[in-house]
Image (cartoon, one colour):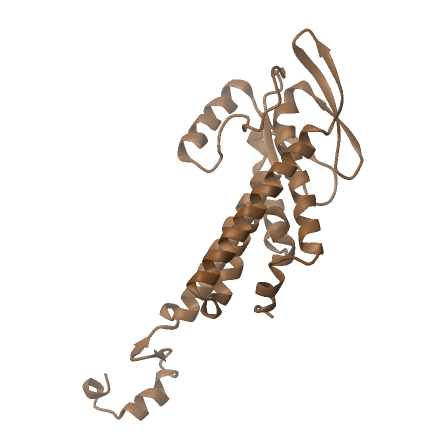
Length: 254
């Protein structure tokens, strides 16, 4: 480049910044193409994915005419909201059954509205969640996702390949333990249920904080899934509150 421009390499280095460029190794590049900027953009993208996952866990949709039958299950009500197919199916179901949406904000009462009117409420909670620090975001997602998305990218240069694999194995094992415990807690949260034949008209559930909540038949399946996430949240909170194997890795971020 110095030869083409017929200037010395020293002059080129001095003037690169004035031209809005940076020198990285043997290349002159735009700042947006630097390794640091790409790493920063990747972290932002991964954080955005985590925010989306948290938002999805705090909302559910239900059919007002539905009746709860059968055994307790954690299968989502109708579809995964992240796939194109599910979006199409969701719109068709919404038109046919007039689904309603329940949104659980971090503060204030839950919001129960028509699914066709949910967007402003969801965008508001998305904005609130996106402003949370990583220390709070991590309470709402599996340890593995938090570690892979927000921890390892920042300390990867300090870890050997073997250390990285060992860390992933540890968080995966801990996630499995937490998931089993959360399911058990949610299943044991049923305090009372009123039935009519094979249909459960309503169910009284005890939340992890001790509060009782009555759920009508048309929301039981979806609320049980949300309840499992509440239990999972409390389990993760205790994990991070106490000394744990992640502490030494998080220390590298300080």
